[in-house]
Length: 248
Image (tube, rainbow, N blue to C red):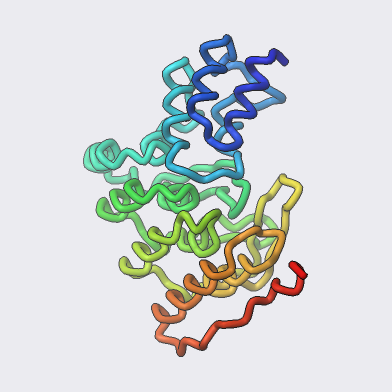
């Protein structure tokens, strides 16, 4: 692997747009597969979630990269205008199904709204909902009966709580909080791969309190309270900090 290619992969980790640009200008190939995956897929599989994803993605596109599923592009670029145009031209656009590797909640057999929710792209999510996307659309269920989750599952314990605004957007649009799953994949294929059994959006939010999930506890409690409120359930005083003892 060339030094420029190695620099490109390292730049993906924090969505460092300047470093991505430098690596590409130094000769890193935006199209050549690396260990069976194109650079654009390596970028999308990163742990990081940020507004800079669209900038990094655009740099790869400008250097000839392409996605296996081009209908994903406006969602990943957070391009609401293109989404509105595509949805107007084709009423089936908002029901389109796709699959991506996800570092967190599974993106296997999901709608475009699931993808927008996972990456925290609120402009895309808002445009999809306005175009008629079903906020309670279910992801595919696998052969073991796992997944089948709705977009809100991607928002309740997101990295840096980035998708919380989309959680509220989904709730305002009628997203259900009482959906029960037999189980759901977290980080499938990664070192932190876990199957969480018998989950709802509220219990899945609480999974963010597990230390290996690396979420801010105060964010998680706020999300739980919002979900409880949306479900018309009583809201307890959530003052406990279950992981405090681990820091002593």
